[in-house]
Each structure stands twice: as structure tokens, then as C-alpha cells.
Amino acid sequence: MSNSDRFSLSMRLFHWGMAALVLSMVAAGLLMVTSLQPWQLTLLNIHKAFGVMAILLVTARLINRLRHEPPALPHELADWQKTVAKASHWLLYILLFAMPVSGYLMQYFAGRPVDVFGWFRLPAALQVDIHYYALFRELHGWLAVVLIGLIALHIGAALHHHFIRKDDVLKSML
Amino acid sequence: MRTLYLALLLAPAVSFGADAPPKVSAQQFVNLQQGNSAFPGFRRAHAKGICISGEFRVNGQLADYSQASLFKAGSTPFIGRLSIAGNNPTAPDLKAPVRSMALSFASSRTEQWRLAMNTPPVMAVADPHTFYQQIQAIQAGPAAIKQFFADHPESDEFRAWAAQYQPSGSFAAETYHSINAFYLVNTDGKQQAVRWAMRPTVAVPATESDRDNALQQEIAARIAAGEVVFDWVFTLADPSDDETNPTKAWPDNRQQITAGQLVLTGTTPQLEGDCHAINFDPLVLPVGVKATADPILRARSAAYAESYRRRAKEQLQGALEGSNNE
Image 1 (cartoon, each protein chain N blue to C red):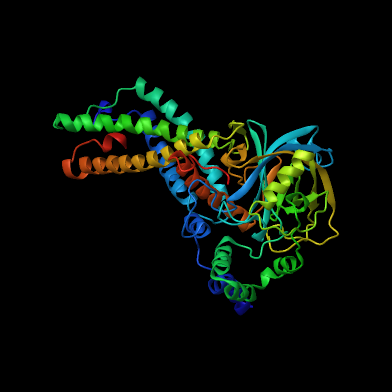
Image 2: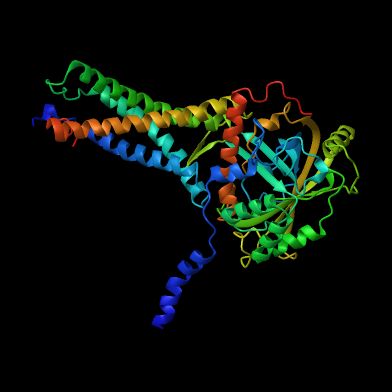
């Protein structure tokens, strides 16, 4: 496999770093909205702080993505498959922005400043707005469901390329 | 020696297995609180209340213990809520066993503080899963709650309080306790475990009334006639006190510091006031105040959030349109 068949090192680092971050945040999110255990508060605070990191990371990643050409998709893929692949990748980017933004806005309108590891705090509304809170709270939940579905599709497609089509798509990200 | 070591190793597992109640989720907890017929758009617990507003006039005595700007100087406005326990927003005020005061200080965009206080100084139980069983017992009736208390000796102090507690004739004449302990943190990073109480400055004898809104009408009239004042008193724990156990009060001789006066100057029916939108989650804390490891305290964020999410969604869907406070 030549170098041009592979994602650049920076793109691979962003991909796997954010994969770990996003999967742990999804797991933390699902746990913290149900658990009454003493660690719930700690998990909640970590989830919010990591959300702030996530939006910084995805911004840097998007800039990096626009400056690098990803390897071409295999020629033998049908046009519709190429379209789905590209659309799902851009949809993932949109969700990686929409998740932290909706998460922050629900905190903002609930009047809860977000503390980032005690280093600094993001501002919150001085007057709580329960309508906007409800809107962004429900949006955050629904976007999470779409994100989980897309991640499943993404992983499924990568495994399909590797084990069934036996092409270099998965290897290009390793 | 080896036997002892093994016994020590196994003791936590054994006692955990023997005593631990089944773990419940935030959703199960709020389901139990709201009962079979939820009131859409209203809080699942302490559904009936009245909005209050006013200011906290600080005296500066707590500034050495916490860097929260609230304790430095001057006065900080608040929005708050006086409420009664229960899931019914139209329940008769005088029938509720517990009365509450909640406060929200929005000192700045990055510093907010929510407080949720009740008339009992301690909890009957020390963890949320046992608390769930206590609520089940309360719902099941007097025999079940009697049995529950008999099975839970940690409820002794709560029962002693309940036995001597005489409800007053006014929200203005109750003492409201933080119940859970928190840490104050000063600019040097030094931590001090505290509990606090809002202590009344008036005494009002109990009243006989068959009006459902007796307490709300009384406090609205009282505040309309003049300021209602509470002393905000902090109790400082000794190193020997357990700040993680909400069932045990600390000894009476612990140092107490009055941080200032809480002055109530206005009331508004809850659906017309600013307090209705607020989730009074006591874990929204300013820099300078931290949560202890108290398991009840640490369960509150998730449970409050679930109740808040449900009613916020219902309100978005129009649940309260056309509602009034009657």
C-alpha cells in the first residue's frame, strides 16, 4: 500500500483519538443519566469538561481534514455506495459539532456554568429558560441516538470492507 | 492472623451482600415519586410551592472559609421557592409533613449556587437506594413505615426530630436545613466541612385552617406587609464528625458562624414566577463550595435532572398552557 492510499498520520491520530473520546463520552452520557451512585457527579463533570475538549478537537480536526486529501475510495464501489460513504462521513462531522454545542446550550439555558477541570468555567444564562433547556436537552438525546447509529454503520462498513470486500479501506486508517 | 486477614478481606463483601438494598436508577426513583398519576409540567417532588425573591445581606464572617463571592461583601439578590413535600401541585399546605426552601443565586455568568433545604435536620436513611424503600413504605401506609423504621435504626435521629417537631403557622417561622454537608474551600485551598440552616427570626403559632393554600396566602400577605428575615447559620464540623452521613447531626457544641441575613421581599405564584423554570439541584455550586461524598447528596443531580427533563419536555409540549395556580 503506497502512502497516498493511506490517511495522513495527523488524520489517523485525530480519528482514533476522537473515536476513543466519543465512545467514552457516549458511555458516560448513558450511565450518568440513570445512575444514582456516588461517582455519578464525578462522571457528569468529566463528561461536560470532555465535551469542551471535544469541540476544540473537532474544530482542529476539520481544519486538518480540509488541508489533507483523504485516499480515494476503491474504484469498484458503486456510485451510491460512494455517496453514502461520503455523506455519512460529513454527517459524523456535523454530529461531532452538534453534540457538544447542544450539550453546552442545555446547560447554558438551565443556568449551569460548565466547569472545565477547575481551570475555567463556561458562562451560563443568568435567567433560566426552561423552554430552550427542554429543546436542547431533547435534541442532545436524539442526536446521541443518531450518533450511536452512525458509529455502528461506520464500524460495520469498515469491517465489511476489510473482511468481505477485502480491500484497503480499513487499513488506510490504521 | 491469616484468618483475621481473610475475615477483613471478606467483611465488606459479606456485609454489602447482606444489607445492600437493590440498586435503583434515577428513572425508577422519579417514577416512584410521581406515582401513578403524574401532574404534567410540575415538579415530581415538592410540586406545590410559591416563588420568592429577595437578597442575601452578607456580614463577611464566612469570607475566610470560602472564596465564593457571595460571602465577601454587600448583598446578592436571589430567586427562591417555598414548597411542601409531595407530588400534587394542589395539595393542602397544612397536611404536608415537610416544608422546604430553595434558593438560586446567580452571582455571575460563571458563578451560580442552588440550595435545596428542608425542615428536618437529618435524613432517615443514608443512601438513595434505601431512601427509595422508605418512600415505598410511606406510600404503603403507616404499618409499612413503622416496620421500615424498625428495620432501619439509622433513622433514630430523624424519628426523634419528627416526634417533637411542631409545624408553625408560617413558612417564615420554620428552620430550613441543608441536611447534607458540603465543603467550604478558601483561597488557600483549605477545606472545611459544614452544614447550614436558615433560622427564622419570627415565631408564628400553628393555625387551624381548611384552606388548601393557607401557608401560601400567609407568606404572601406577610411579605407584602414587610421583609421576612432568616439568619443563615453555618455549623463547622470537627475532624471527628462524619460529613458523609446525612442521618447523624453533629454535636451541639460545634462552632457556628452566621454568614448574614436572608431577606425575603417578594412572592409570586409559581407558574407566573421565575422559580418555576429553575432546577434547584444543590450540586450547582460556586467556586469555593464543594460536594462531600455523602451518597444521598451525590444522588441528587441525576434524580433532579430526570424530574426536570420530564417537566421541561411536558411544558414544551404545552402541558401548562391555560393552567393557573389555583
